[in-house]
Amino acid sequence: MHAFTGLWGPGTTRAPPAGRLLLLLLFLQAATRPSWGDPADSEFTSLPVRDEMIAKYSNLPLETHNISLTEHVSTPVEKNITLEKASKVELACQLTTSGDVNAVNVTWKQGDELLPNNFVINTTGNTVYTQYTFTIINSKQMGDYSCFFGEEKERRGTFKIKVPQLHGKNKPLITYVGDSTILMCKCEGCHPLNWTWYRMNESAQVPIDTHLDDKYVINGTYANETKLRIKQLLEDDKGLYSCHAVFQLGESEDHVELVVLSFLVPLKPFIAIVAEVFILVTIILLCEVYTKKKKQGPDDGKEFEQIEQLKSDDSNGIENKAPRLRKTESVDQ
Ligand SMILES: *[C@@H]1O[C@H](CO)[C@@H](O)[C@H](O)[C@H]1NC(C)=O
Ligand SMILES: *[C@@H]1O[C@H](CO)[C@@H](O)[C@H](O)[C@H]1NC(C)=O
Ligand SMILES: *[C@@H]1O[C@H](CO)[C@@H](O)[C@H](O)[C@H]1NC(C)=O
Ligand SMILES: *[C@@H]1O[C@H](CO)[C@@H](O)[C@H](O)[C@H]1NC(C)=O
Ligand SMILES: *[C@@H]1O[C@H](CO)[C@@H](O)[C@H](O)[C@H]1NC(C)=O
Ligand SMILES: *[C@@H]1O[C@H](CO)[C@@H](O)[C@H](O)[C@H]1NC(C)=O
Ligand SMILES: *[C@@H]1O[C@H](CO)[C@@H](O)[C@H](O)[C@H]1NC(C)=O
Ligand SMILES: *[C@@H]1O[C@H](CO)[C@@H](O)[C@H](O)[C@H]1NC(C)=O
Image (cartoon, rainbow, N blue to C red; front, side, top):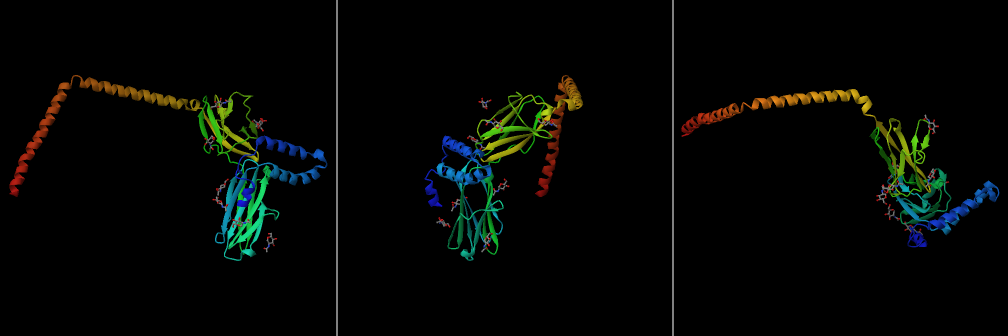
């Protein structure tokens, strides 16, 4: 594995010069045009050539991933790999077994299709190591790549290669008529070539065109996010919206549900009742405060007397207790 990375130099993960890659892709696209002869024929001959040239002439970033299997774990091991642009990929699996390593049969599959036997197999001690190296340049090459180790029982490791997943909102976004709102989608550490928003009606996805309708503004602060701003919300704006990201190796989408509440129309009778109750309660409270004040005003003296009386009651209590206390003391003695 280290020998391999050496081939690509220390800066294996540096991005390819965009201009050069683009030129190369354009050239290759021209090269695969049917005008070169029989369409089927040209496709047959040019595809491997194209892969080879891209691998040879462009400095694609390198993705290395590995899965370790043991004979004790019989469930397949899966690993997710996120990839958005053309890359060289090195997938490695290793199986540690107490059996005979030389009897282990190794195969690789893309989906359900057997891959050609051009992978590395290498056994050291009680581990079997296999590595499959290839170049991903289009969306058809995305998907599941599995290594199989055939013993008495088969062991499988699967690499699931996907474009970045988008994250909209799981919960509906609740807004009110007349407001404006922002729907957002993002993906982690991704750089889509293009973001688009769609509105879903019963039958179709309708692209949102900000030039046709200034109700919508699409903007994002970073490459890894997109924001759809909808102004002057109407009840008709409710529903499902979807955001799409286009990557070199495929597309990804997610949904955001928008709920637009018109709180005024259905709530009018309710609001009227609440308002009435509120006014009544206020009036009652005001009356009570007013009558209390009115009572308090001239009764200031009376209240003073009452307090005095309470105080004297208290002291009476103490006086009443005092003899009792003395009594118990005398009993003790
Ligand atoms: C053989 O496998 C080991 C890991 O088990 C790895 O480190 C080594 O590079 C492999 N050798 C070759 C020639 O691929
Ligand atoms: C296997 O992958 C893990 C991370 O998933 C990494 O730490 C480890 O170095 C890799 N092993 C090899 C032999 O490449
Ligand atoms: C891989 O991704 C799927 C969904 O895309 C998720 O359900 C699963 O848990 C992920 N597996 C790992 C090992 O992260
Ligand atoms: C190894 O796997 C291949 C493909 O599944 C199969 O054709 C072959 O018979 C297997 N060999 C052994 C020894 O199991
Ligand atoms: C999006 O990109 C910005 C700037 O590069 C970064 O700060 C932010 O963490 C990224 N967000 C996600 C979800 O990757
Ligand atoms: C993004 O994609 C849409 C639909 O495919 C297209 O109409 C639009 O021109 C693209 N925008 C950019 C900047 O590539
Ligand atoms: C959905 O949108 C399509 C495209 O704009 C339009 O032709 C169709 O009539 C719409 N359907 C409904 C039910 O609004
Ligand atoms: C997008 O938003 C940023 C900040 O939120 C703003 O500076 C920029 O002008 C906006 N771009 C457009 C085209 O509205």
